[in-house]
Image (cartoon, rainbow over all chains, first blue to last red; front, side, top):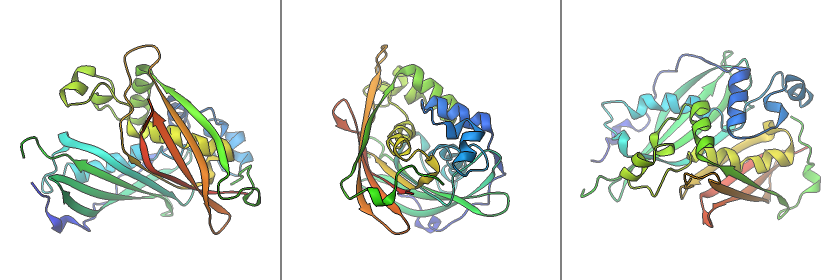
Length: 150
Length: 142
């Protein structure tokens, strides 16, 4: 069933702050097998001009996608999450995410389309730090595949 | 930010050193834990097949994380990545053996932009199939 177009432009309240820890960044870097010392060694990060270890460019997705979950699971929107696949993903960084950040996410529905029975949802997540400065914006395109026989 | 590559030293067409990144079932379990994405299509073969997939597949975000390593290894400072976007075109299928799958990534400078930034276009394949489309990064060079 096509999603309600009136949801386009709807924003959800900012999330509670997510505190980025050094060890969480290390765990993520190890999981993707990336030995770049900027992720694990504060001295190496400082030598590059960062105040503390930084996170890999896609790390913030774990935070923005959790925030997008509020949109996806909004019963008024009525998306069938069991049929959702990830279509596109994009990040624009003002600065890298780093250890010690306390990040909040504000999610907005940018677009809703229906294509060949698939519902396509574009969600923008604006990520700010504790001082209210913009850190990164994440765009996530989710595709809810048409039910069989629909 | 301290990229080790100078804007003045690259041209449109400059190729980045390619990378190839292995992924096994164990990698996917580790990535699930680190990223918090526990969707069973990434670790449960029975479930993956029930929803019409050929086998367990890698997280799209895992593939995205591997592809950008070609860029971050090139510039040295991962903080130099200003923009990064991909389209997930085909899944990376990860068989239940000790070899798993291989994600092969190449990249080249597609445009020189303002403010000492360049656009790098990436190509990521696995088992001969293109797994990412429109895979582009904007990177600030020295």
